[in-house]
Length: 252
Image (cartoon, rainbow, N blue to C red; front, side, top):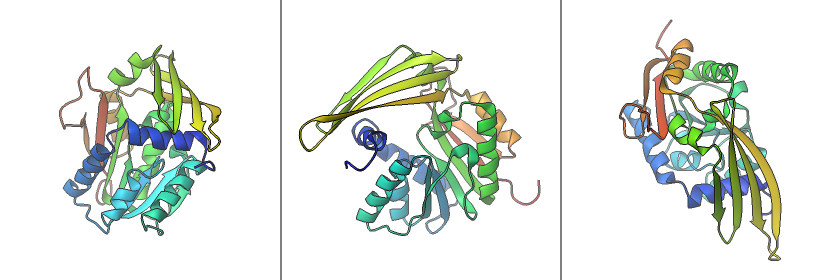
């Protein structure tokens, strides 16, 4: 693991230790099934990280492409896929706001906060426009974000994770009202028993349900659904928002 960046290793630890990964796999698998996107269809997994969703969907028979801004994340994802016997998944390094995928897709997915990193109106508009162009007519876009009820109270909070493999200290501050600045200090265990320290800074925007609906409709999407993870309407206490929308069939 030494050859991967601290962020890639920590993200992989975080997903394995703290996150209900099976919930994401089940949720997005269900979205694909309900949308008529069957195994064998082309699916793009954006902000794919270390492949936590990409690999299981490929194992289920979908033809996946994984995209992420971090080459180190993709390197770790590529190695994990190879260990699972999946050597034909293309892994490409791209920013969501500058998306340029090869070919067309039956579904475009972006799980676990990728869209929160688009902090400017122009960035989310660009992402949705490019995702729309990448979809086949009738194709589905699905993503989930941390809602305002989860992100905004994080301001001033400090979080930590400590395992045998590594640890992090995560501090948060409010920036421009609906943007949270996250500063991570990461410690990763080395074979010699010492630790390597590194630092990362991230910024995430809290989007309301109404904002997301407006951006999606402006991009041309139809059948827009914005709910919590159980399918209920988004309320003031909703922690995680799930979005699905479809590209129109035919002209218009």
